[in-house]
Image 1: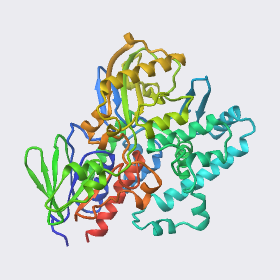
Image 2: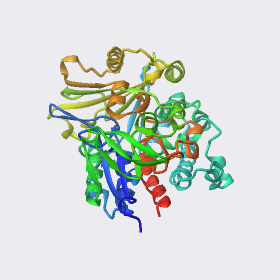
Image 3: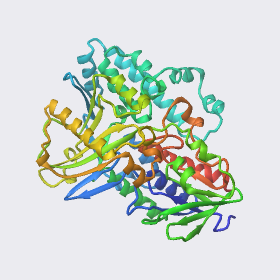
Length: 499
């Protein structure tokens, strides 16, 4: 029987990965205290409330709802008793400067019609793509994503030779799409997901065709009250399970002595003792800024070698009246598609041909804005902070806003300055300062071939006994479903090691 101190876990940070880990650890009998620096939990999935508007700061839609259903089911609860999910259908529309549009839908017939419109005769290819990506999705979630495996041979050894060949790990994302589609617009739309994985579709593994497939197969959803409504539901689940949640409780140090974790020091100097600490602060930030060890800590120089996803500038606009010409979810892609990726990932500059994303969540949930008004969210990718040293980010944000409004106007969407009742802007500097995001990277470590699976940052420290990681920069990866799975995986890891 373990002592009370041996069964105590301190979780640093309060994002969805932290909340998931806390729930799973509590269900396994651990005494769990979650320490969140901000006034509310959620991490980058946070909330801005202003002038009657309610803005989600980061994720703006929910995909793979089954992951959240499993989290609640583990505690003997039902997701629908905590959160109401509103369908977003059609899910999103891609738009180009030449007037071309392409809309994704969870209705296969609608998706088929869109592909036929842009590429007549493509119906057989659409079915082949859906079968192929569906099999990749099954293999990924049944055999790869949901396991703690540190040995690459063992990780891939779970697959049959046919499954291994079908993963597309040795072909690019774009190469996989070219097997099925001739239309550049279809390929560019489906391949654009690569940007949020930290690479281009010309470089990332073909396995990631599972991203557009997963959104179509399981739909896109908006939790009632916005994504933060989901966060509130998970927080309630954690508290009901017996997790102690402390907000406005900043951890300044994770203390290690003699190669083992000793506890954490809070901003007010108080030391909380525990031999088990799970950090939901971005893993490279944890290693470089939080860990205080009396021995050399090799993870610090390794952190600098981690390839990160891009930064983002995000705008939150409370707009008077309806925003005509936009659905809930739109992505604007430039004509120089490859050049945008090269600017962002190779040249280290804001793309001259700027891709960006616009969401109007109040179109689905009118309660997110005052009556007759619209809540608008805009996200534009940027290089990380280290790629643009000395940048004036307020000026960069101003120029990005100007380009976004110009592009919207070209597409018949006009948001006149006098209609913007309130505005908040987050640059990569703000994302780093507010949420501890390493180098201002918005989505955590990139998903290059050698940063997935057992090659990704492990969810435990190989140097400090008792230190664990959860969230976007560790296994299995970035995105709300992945960090929730990350919480289960780290809880399983700790349980295996603490008998």
